[in-house]
View (cartoon, helix red, strand yellow):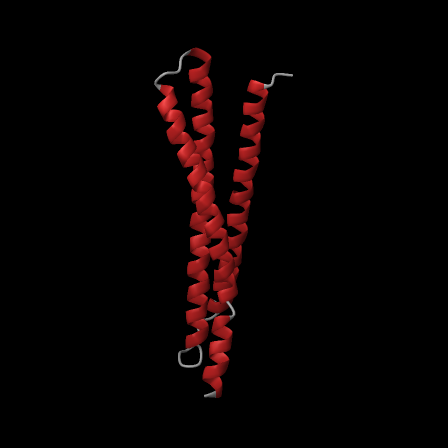
Length: 144
């Protein structure tokens, strides 16, 4: 019984990682909706646009598509991190009754943290790209 209690305590610890990934996924999926909606709006405007306006719309759509790709990668890394954390919980729970694979818990924990770090890098890249596109749009409407 004592071993089971210890195994449960150890297996629940990675749930903090899953919670962190969950909050990050919520933020990322909410951010993903904005460029998708904006792209759809701009695509409706493309039909009526001519000349410089058409070029500007294409440029905006390219930036928004790039943002969607960054966010898709960040979401994929977050989901991979959740998978690693869940596998870690399962591994820690089964340790008392199954033979321990060498370095499996440590490897899963490191993989989850690497996924978290990668997700944050892509999240920050999206924020950087958003601000850069805002600067381009502002300079088009408010020339220096």
